Image (cartoon, rainbow, N blue to C red; front, side, top):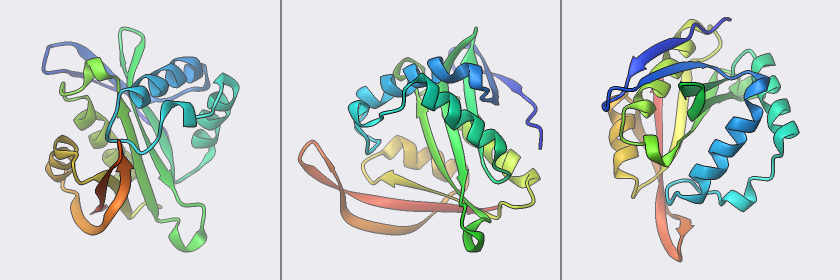
Length: 181
């Protein structure tokens, strides 16, 4: 299924294009991920734990392109990738109708609407994909902005595990949220 790119205006009036990632994005995408992982307290992964190199990132993008129940989208401004969202469909037959969201946005582009654009496009793609029936995600209970965004996009809380994440020696609950397509 082809993904048609779309362009939006951020809250600060910058143009953002949402499009499907291509292998040529590997170096920029890797740089972006390492940037937001270094500066986050809402993603349970340290930058040094993300071990992909550019070749592996290239291969990752190609895998997303081949999987019928998955997509990797990027948010781009003037040729620079500033955000990404992956919708990863389960490879298990009994769960192939489900997909989990992972998303990150460059720290300089947060709170500008980029997350809304990325999620909306992932949902729109899922609605056109006959395989996907459920999208789910996991979020830190302390990520107030993230939870507000997901609720705005009609995700519902469906589960919680107390003290799941250990962020800076502080235990944080994990919330699971879901939307039916």
